Structures are given as structure tokens and as C-alpha cells.
Image 1 (cartoon, one colour):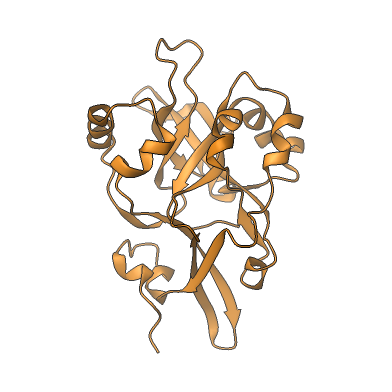
Image 2 (cartoon, one colour):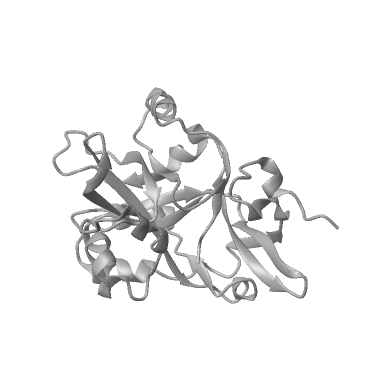
Length: 239
């Protein structure tokens, strides 16, 4: 699964690949508007940066950057708490599930992250690990987003997101049997294209990362508490 992650790279840097047609000033303005800052321990129900294709009715046809609540709330839901159980969607069965099938067809997005956390069971409890790109790149986790008109506030619809997961590759399976689906930059356009509604065309993207693409290292148990959104989350564990 993917239940916690971080994004500490400044938006001015990671958006260069995710939003290549945006100017530096537009990125700076949007960063300020969204109130985006370095995050070291992003948890479910919090707002996360998401990159989506432009709405077909929008005059600006470039990719868009929004904040969505983490934990997908279906359009038909009457209680926002349902999202607490939908922070992840299994990529193998998402196309079969009522809550995920339509978003998989029409509302796919990218969730940027520097790394995500998993907990490995040991004889002394659970040891947290951060899993990052071996090359140091910002990860693009595959997301599905949804709009719920009834549960928004101040007349604004509630927009939520779930992160797709797949079986962990061999090296990471020693820590956890699942991992987020990671979309490569060359596949961003294919993944985000809302006109591409053939599920068969995106299913090949929903696979584990290559064996050498990711690096895992143990980190401090400071990350265990979701209230600890501090750089110390990434420190080596106490000996």
C-alpha cells in the first residue's frame, strides 16, 4: 500500500517535468495560491498536489495543478468518512470496482512525491523505511480523482484522490508486498489524456517499478506519528 509519503523538493523544481508549459511566474503564483511548502510526512485526509489534464471545457489546454483531499470519496457517497478506506486502489481490480472504474477511464492524475514510507515487521516491532528513486528523481504516483458535489463546502465541490498500487517488485517485497504505481515521464501524456478512455491502453502502465529503479533505507520512528511533519522523519534510525 501507500499510506504516507513526502514531497520536499521545491515546486519550482518538480513542476519543470510535470508542468513543462507553465512559466516560472505561473508556477510561483500557483505555489503561493495553493500554500504549498515542503512536506515530510503527508498522511491520508490531507491535501496533496495532483497534476491533471485540462478540463475539455477549459480554454487553457495545459495540464493543471490542484490540491485534492487524499482518500477518494465517490460521487454518490453521503459521508466523507468513506474516503478513509479509499486512500489506495488496487490496480489489478480498479476497473471492476464501482468507486474506481469511471475515474480510471476519465479522471487519471499524477501525485508527485520524493519518496513514500513503508513499515517492515521486525522482532522489535515495525521499522519505517523511505523508498525513493535511485536516480533522485521526483516520483509520479498514479492517481485517480473524483468530484462529489454534495460534500463540498461553501459551494465548492469536494475533490478527492486515491493512489493506485501494484505488487511490489522483488527487492521491495522484503519490506511490503505492495507499492504505488509509478508513471514514467514518457508516459505522462498517455496516462493523463482524458480523451483516452480505453482502459486497455493504460493497463500496461500499471506495473511494478524496475528492480534497480528504487532505493529503500530505514528512517526514524518520528515518521510513525502523522503529526510529525518535520525533516527528522527522514533521519537514520536511532542505534
